[in-house]
View 1 (tube, one colour):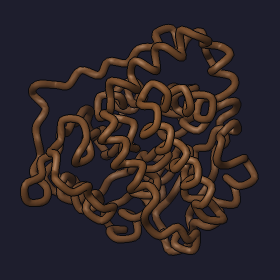
View 2 (tube, one colour):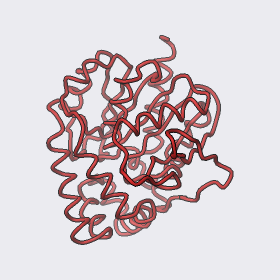
View 3 (cartoon, rainbow, N blue to C red):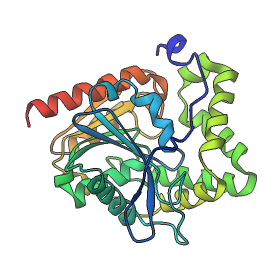
View 4 (cartoon, one colour):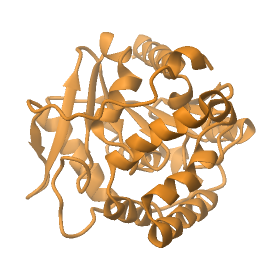
Length: 290
């Protein structure tokens, strides 16, 4: 990991763009959306800990070659709050209608952790709209999702018993790699905590972590997805090791696995440039065979 370069600044620019549109999707729902760059479209999918501005630092090289769309999920960030937490199906519908509004026929999806389940569901329900998927630190595993959901339940208990700062302290050594933890030390821990606490409210995380317990967990679903799929996996991921990562990729008819050395559950945190290069090579390969 190029720690001296990738982690010079441990703070993220989370400011929202005042000129960014709110895009109507379902009745009564509008999503905050940022679109940058031109060309083949990439759409980022937030897990429940991220907001749209967070992705800028991890797509800054991709926007030089592609169009990158980042948006806030319904009930999160600058997007509409609804009385009931959206289901996975409603999140998928929001994405498709967002793409319609942006004039995008098909897109690559970059998903992380819990949002890899959303990417899976979109690829199953709308295969014509997904050109390819990059699943970073996936929760969809070759043997199911039991371990992921146990972990999420533990985080939920910490959140509701002790609050957001203690949840962060609980999650940090599980999600962040050994290498990043040792190299960035206290400044890295505190800088990322500032971003973590700024991106979500306790209510948003509570709702998101509860939703993460729901949905079909069978790995058999992955065998039905013919969309080109890249598993981007840190070899220090808490959920999957390299062996399981390759087993997971093999379930997809058109899957492959790239192991990122010394990276954790969110591998682009460890090596933003390396991750983006993986994504670029994957897209260029898929496009060359389109």
